[in-house]
Amino acid sequence: MNPNFLNRRVWLCALASAAALGLGTAAQAQTFPSKPIRLVVPFPPGGATDILARILGEKMALAFKQPVVIDNKPGAAGIIGTDAVAKAPADGHTLVLSLSNSLLTNQFLYEKLPYDMQRDLTLVYQIATAPLVLVVHPSVPANTGPELLQYVKANKGKVAYGSYGIGAYPHLAGAHMNLTQQADMNHIPYKGEAPMMLELIGGQIQMAYASALQAKPHLEAGKVKAIGVTGERRMSTLPNVPTLAEQGLKDEVYRVTGWLGMAVPAGTPKAVVDRIAAEVRAATRQPDVQARIAAMGFEIKDSSPEAFAAVYKQELPVWERLIKQSGAKLE
Image 1: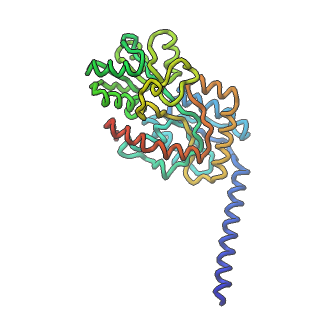
Image 2: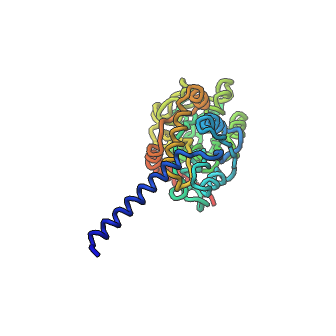
Image 3: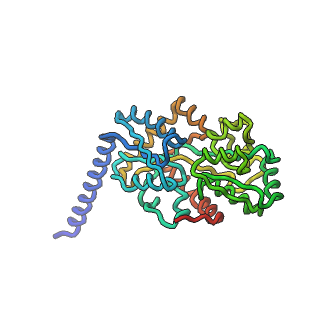
């Protein structure tokens, strides 16, 4: 038989297979979703992540013409809920909306995870960044970032800072300040942001990084003082509080922020991933959604699967360094 004929036959078969695959993917996108969507939140109800999921879920349900069911699966710093999505069918009907800890930093913090972020999940959309405000008890005689650095250095071993978990940003940022100032500060981890704030107000700890959602009422009541906010821009909900970077704290730990993002099981068809991303973007463009997200202290991102993947790749080594520097390690 003519070898050229065989080569041509192989080429035509490959071309037909590719076309069939493309048609199949397109058809999946057109029929998606074919049933209710489960949006997993790996944290308890009532927190900022849960509130955001419910806001977006309501809008997505209208766009998809299918219910979006919020499924809270808290526990183990977001690991339990994230793992449930990693092991779900890769058809786009199971999503996770989570913080950067379960989708990024946990892989450096824990000795072993039940899922591999790089292998088992696909990033869909970075919804918003989550800058925090560095707050102190009113008894701390510091009103700016540089003054606070001087204070903790001069009061070695006398300052305690809180966080809402080992390896969370408030812990890593506090550990960095402790190391650079040789302050011998005491780290107190709490089981949530609310108890951390109560201890700060009560004077059991002297400083903490908190969300605007938790800190703003106490700032307005004069129960805590704002030193500055993390990230590159001021929070729209706290416009008079300068960033730590603009106060001269240029270290990368003060310039990065956590974020909230959405992911699906790896292997989910690209057309389905793009469709979900498009609907999330459309929801976050709506004025009422933007107002509610801004009120929580988050900064809305204009994202896509590709843009999210690029940000993730850029931030990965930064967080790895911060965690190694802190010495935090969990089983």
